[in-house]
Length: 137
Ligand SMILES: [Zn+2]
Ligand SMILES: [Zn+2]
Image 1 (cartoon, protein in one colour):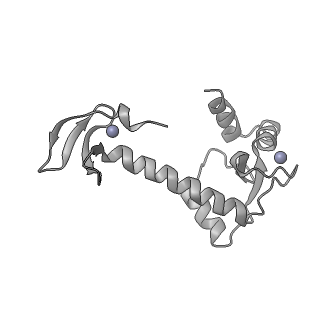
Image 2: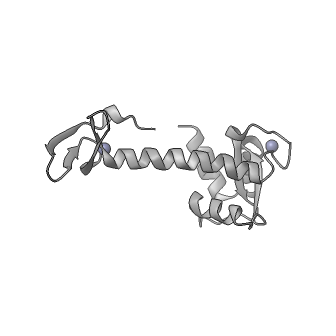
């Protein structure tokens, strides 16, 4: 996750509420209540992540809160798995969460990170391979 300190604003134009961010380039400015100016692009990302994390917990509770294969129940390592491989057509988390919260749980199951990784490698799912590669970073 990026820290806001890495997002240094220059060429700040208070009237237009625009600035150049060292990471995002031209960006809108967010005026914090304490008077600080921060990169709005960063802030939106940050809020999105926070929102997704909160949603994740709700969705996991909704799905029973434990891995369907081994019963592991720490939500931080639980993942929502598409029962049938997605063939690379990766849906955004927002769409998946919406589907589950509106009652369409059928296509998904809750797996812990271990079971999901094993399932993906056994089924040679492309998404799974992608995930495994990502974990190594
Ligand atoms: Zn930025
Ligand atoms: Zn498991």
